[in-house]
Each structure stands twice: as C-alpha cells, then as structure tokens.
Image (cartoon, rainbow, N blue to C red; front, side, top):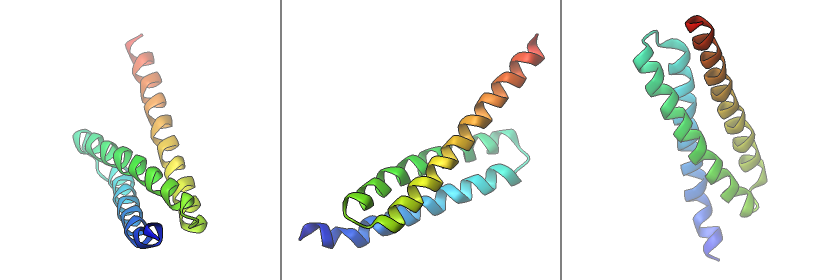
Length: 97
C-alpha cells in the first residue's frame, strides 16, 4: 500500500523536474550569452536525468501514460543536448585546423 501513497509525490516531482528541464531548453534557445547557455544546458541535463529516473519509477508503479511520455520526451531532450555537443565539438575542431 505504500506504493499508492507515494504515487502523487512521484508524479509531482516528475512534473516539476520536467518543467525545469523544458525551461532550461527554452532558455538555451533564447539566451544569447554563452555562459548562460552553458548554465541552461547543465540545468536541463540534470533535470532531464532526474525526470527519467522518476518516469521509470512511475512506470514501475503502473502509471504508464505519464511515465512513458516523460521518458520519451526527456530522452529526446538528452539526445538533442548530445547532438549539440557533437556538432560544437566538430565545429571547434574544424576551426582549429
């Protein structure tokens, strides 16, 4: 019975960290300063990793809809961050050559 009692807490934490991650993505796109972009990327990296952890907990507690949705969107956000790092690395490498 402890699982049913913890479900609203886990759900609210997942929604909170997902919202923080999405605000980080929007800030990364909008903000022109490189330092603030790095902070925003770090924020949404951490927030999406925590969201993935909570979405896995939601899936284990049979809340499939919200858990799978957050898992897919957070994974795509982390993939977007990884692609951005790879592109930045390649551009920096080609500029130095």
